[in-house]
Image (cartoon, rainbow, N blue to C red; front, side):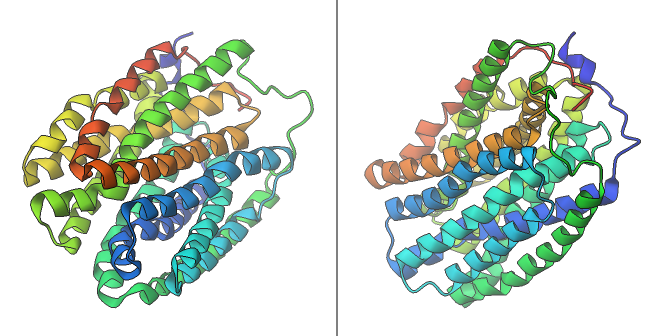
Amino acid sequence: MTDTTLSRPKAGGTALPVLGTISVCHLLNDLIQSLLPAIYPLLKGGFDLSFAQIGLLTLTYQITASLLQPIIGLATDRRPAPYSLTIGMGASLVGLVTLAFAPNYAALLIGATLLGFGSSVFHPEASRIARLASGGAHGMAQSLFQVGGNAGSALGPLLAAYIILPRGQESLSWFALAALGGMALLTGIGRWYARSDHARPVRRGAAVRHPGLTSGQVNRALAVLMVLILSKYVYLASLTSYYTFFLMERFALAPDSAQLCLFVFLAAVAMGTIIGGPVGDRIGRKTVIWVSILGILPFTLLLPHVGLTATVVLSAVIGLALASAFPAIIVYAQELMPGRVGMVSGLFFGLAFGIGGMAAAGLGVLADWKGIGFVFQACSVVPLLGLAAALLPNVSPHKAS
């Protein structure tokens, strides 16, 4: 059975209001999360931070999220917690306020930790909600869910440029209103989940892995997907954490102009996320994964060597193509292990955060040592790891999933 058997799933049972709400909540969650890297120029000047300290701040946030996500996902696979999403958003609210009024670097690290905890609760459970509400159109639902997050990530730098950077660190607290709104919406989602037939533990003896694959095949496929996540998020870390500094150094841009260029890249990421899931439903997840990761190689090789306009255009092309891989990867992984949707979602969202955090820290040290330009040249070859997609087996969706 080929991967193209995933084409054209019927979406008649899709709970669109639930999908729309969880996507809006993802927007609010990731908008809040994205404010941390968006205000790095402000924090760097205000606290006299080195690039290595900025990288450590990112690492603290990302590691907190990555280590907890699969644990939370596994726990809620076994015992559903419909209102955990509200609790996670509350943690993000407290982290945001801590960052707004942090008097020193240690307090910044505490705020970043709380943001990471909020994200670790939100992503595996919200991804599960998207799948449960999909009506069988898993790729479409995952794209709709993820595009909310990417839209929030894109808005963060824009709002930081026009609200936080001109007014200072304490204005970060204004965004607590977004967290409060998210908590209200997520309480409604928790109510829907609690009343549904889905809010019950997985029954004993239920299929954990795809019935058409052996345990060895599933494990090897998961390992390949992890390599692909490594490729995607190492390169993304160079752009999300250091693209503004690259533009300011290479083209002498002002911080607000560099933030606008980052917004263009992140908006393209959001568009790519919309495309990836539905296209994967039609032509197969494996094809989307292969093309989106390896296909950006010519553009990443060019980016460090061209002018400002071409740099912005190339960053948008890279963001569009690279982002289309993640919805396909998540759904592909969920189909490998249909009895562990929460754990698998948490594992891959957590892996994305963890790799992004470690890459940001390592690239920060490299930037202090060799310069920002060298970082972008070194990262340009990372998409070669996309060749590993050839090792993925062809799978069809498991009906019980």
